Image (cartoon, rainbow, N blue to C red):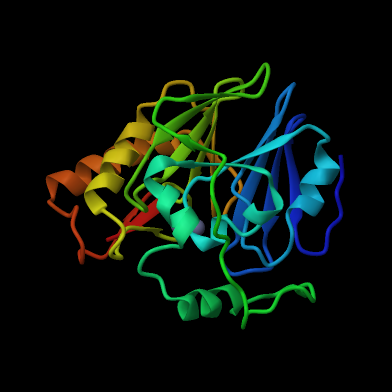
Length: 261
Ligand SMILES: [Zn+2]
Ligand SMILES: [Zn+2]
């Protein structure tokens, strides 16, 4: 299926999985549509510059549940377009009451800079507001989300944010890692609501998930080879051994990924 869209770039990963990317914005955000037999899961809903539902409507007629990797504004942009939204219980409060310790002025600056594609008339950086609302349900570590012939396992992976999750698709071996692991730019754990200790523990946790075939992060490249997980393991050991797992130690670069504390 080929989708042409002015804002979103749709990449078909296999018959029933799609990356929906926003390459017109400096953050290069990805959301992912995972289609099962009975329903589909949308992993995050993008920046909110444009309406991602326009795209998902063309890709499936099945009911869609939104699985939130974490409640940062650049991953919940079109949450308001969907009826069924799930989030880890540690970030229920952020979804309802807003993200803590991040001024709206900063968000508006970040959402509107370094844009290389025309934005829709509906987008106004001066009035832009991240989604706020009640989730349909809460997710917890180890939970299985069933789509019908396709089971997704939820792993709680705090550090970048307290309720961050990654999602493992057992049927394909895809691991959707949100802002815990991506390439090209540093994964962040240097501001007040982050935890370098938790981030490193979470990286260690995902490096031990058996059967991962491909990794899909929330930014930059849409698809990283699973072999990066052995480098993640090496990185975790290096950071721990050298006592670098704390705020202020800066950027630590490894082969294929980096972290900033
Ligand atoms: Zn984030
Ligand atoms: Zn992000």
